[in-house]
Length: 623
Image 1 (cartoon, rainbow, N blue to C red):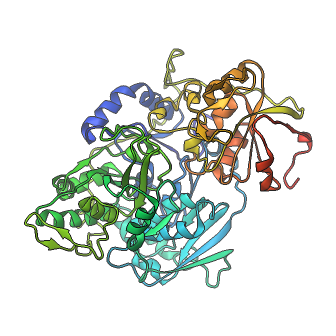
Image 2 (cartoon, rainbow, N blue to C red; image 1 turned 90 degrees about the horizontal axis):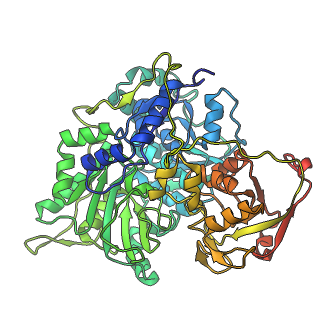
Image 3 (tube, one colour; image 1 turned 180 degrees about the horizontal axis):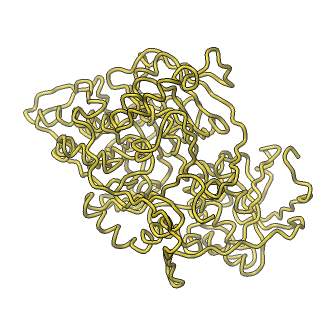
């Protein structure tokens, strides 16, 4: 094919490290990542793919502002692609190989999902925000409760949620393993479409509101959860997992009981999950209340706009300035600390500390590469309030703060406009449309590059059974794609498979010794890092497998977590259960993703055992 078969765009939001502030961090990123950005832009131009320049914003916010519409079926190479469900789209996260299939006009396959219904009654009020709905649902379903299912929200409570609030809920559906999440089309979506210059799409959607874009009456769900929004309490989830749900009224006592650090070192708002105009406006409202009493944020405070449009609009409307006066640093329009792109200097690695964010994930070491950081996810409003107090045991619904004059005061319920009264300011033009004919565009990759490496095909299966496989590592407990292929500073090697493979499994806990990145080389008897031992096995022709626990590969759709084991000689991953995207990624890269018929068999396996996989020629669905 001379160009992609379906409309496609490239977004480079993962390579801007939060260090000083938006403008300087972006300039630095453009300089050190020039080779990568040039490759992405020219490759896109050659094959008819649009390119959003660095600084444009986070892919999911850009999709909501420009491409999403009710009834759309879309795939994206990021687990938080379901963000588009806030506009009534069926948006599903996939690995890169699945996306290539679609772009090449090859049918995309998905195992028929179950449907979980979440019935919403009552209405949001006070400090309770859309984020609290998904934080509560995560506490109910856990990180694997939505695996293999689409979550459909319905009921009279839906209309009390803004369009961007619905997007927040759908975005974080990835944290329960859901295939995607979706809301019915309503007037809040209509308002957002009109505010983003898509009134014609709103008019078309209005015609199909009841027939196609709403939940069917008496629909039969595989599971139903009911939430009364009028009584829903604000939540703070964590640490170390997004499904550990703590109501704000109980958080202080729970933290004390568990020995979590009470002092909040940093508060961070924004990200693809919570960087809407409404989010920023409500946080600015809280900040103004503090400033009125002569106080600012006690914790360091970082703000990540989700897109250039959001950044420009909050600058124009004075929201960004209010947050700066509050003590905040406005970062670049990018993933930043949420994906580990954070040059954090206030603590040392190993220092036990607490941060609160409005992000979607809080896995060990994810934000700052410090495994001792206790990260909590909550609404941007609660992040702001908790940052004023600087303590985890502060409850803005009941507790008082002390102003500069020594007098006590309580925070009023936050308020902010859902949409900007003067419309959105698009800011700088950051999109490059592909040329009509890109056949003459040249795409260069320097063979000596440490950032880019053209892929070579993996060796083909010889048709024989896999016998006497060595166990590289038996992983204990939670093993997300962050544990398998760390993000943060490693992201600069995403285009170079051999270099990024040096992070394979370095965050996974070895069941043999309860340590990370320390396994025994069964050829030499010596202990070493996981990538080093894997390379030694590969060099010596030793085929290996890895053994894992429940919900293996949850989190990011990061395809490198499948590419790296394949590149370093892996043949199979055997676990109690898989997260959907990672299981598919393993299959696409020629690794056998196998589950124990009896999960208890995990306990029988010893690191020195050999594993044989027999009857592979007869392997078929259902067998």
